[in-house]
Amino acid sequence: MESPLKRTHLYNFHKMNGQLTEFAGFEHALFYEGIASEHLAVRNSVGVFDVTHMGRTVVEGEDSISLLEKLIPRKVSIMSNLQGRYGFFLNKNGGIIDDLTLFRLEEKRFLIVYNAGNREKDFRWIRDNSVGYNVKVTDVSDEVVMLAIQGPNALKVLQKLSDKDLYKIKRYWCDWIRLGEFHVLASRTGYTGEDGFELYLWNTPLHMSEKAEKFFSMILDAGREYNIKPCGLGARDTLRLEAGMCLYDHDLNEDITPLEAGFDGLIDFDKPDFIGKSALLEQREKGVGRRRACIKLLGRGVPREGCELYYNDKVIGKLTSGTYSPLLNIGIGMGYVLKEFSEAGTRLKVKIRERLFDAEVVNPPFYDSSKYGYKRAYQQ
Image 1: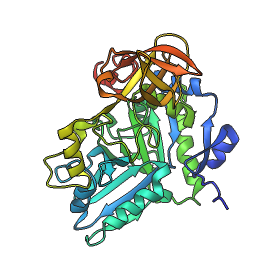
Image 2 (image 1 turned 60 degrees about the vertical axis):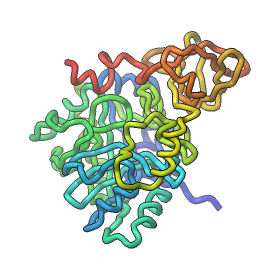
Image 3 (image 1 turned 60 degrees about the horizontal axis):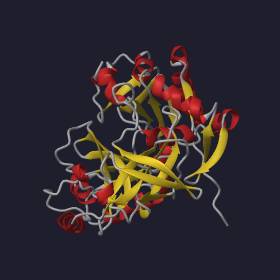
């Protein structure tokens, strides 16, 4: 018998205002007004996402740093308090168990945020590897409401509600702030490519839906002058792909290593040890045979996951994600190709419904980062 679908604190809002879908074991909103309009709201102004379905675990205690140094292939001990880092859990073969964001909340207290579909798997991985360490590992996923406010006007919306200068919080850092009557952890992170924050409202178990709804409504009210839109899972997916960001179980999995995925710079090989290190050292020495690549179609067509990629009638890879870009009005995708075909500018073909379409490998993001995305905020 299948387990019933899980729901976030804001399920009633999603049911009343959105088109529901199943995702990672949750009944959630695919969209409200429409994927394209929600996507463009985030690129041009501001949107708010309920991302409470994400997994969240707190690791704290005397040996917290030692445990995390073992689990994550990035240096943890050198992180400052309130600093965040993107990283991975790896298996012994260097394959990606999950991608994650780590925040150092205090000297020996950390928050790990990971994918909704891996909630149970990741928590077991942390807990099982913590045996013998003097740490406390707590799954707080159902105790913390998580919203993502994204877009060029995201900070303007939140600044109306806070007496702290949010512009001083650097990208991938966090801080405890007040928003109206709520005390929240705010990290300058997101999954859209845009500037903005992810907000964590702690000590809010699932039965406290009214508190979550009040928090969500406050954000929507504050953003009204900027035409803020609630955004669903559909826009979240098209936005992240436009930004060249990976989706676990599609673009990343346990058979793909960070070196194949192009994350060489996120592996600290000079660390004494971490799970998967020896396998990655061997792969680095031999060289990878495939690399992740972003492609855009040069004509009409919509590429999808599973589409084969060709060069001179030879299959050189396939797509792991594909969609139509609402911003650029072209088909875009991401996948893995033989390494020699992964350089930007390489022309290839995508097979869509038995037809071959011309395409080109590009460097992410797909959009002009001087006009869109978080980098624009630092260029103005």
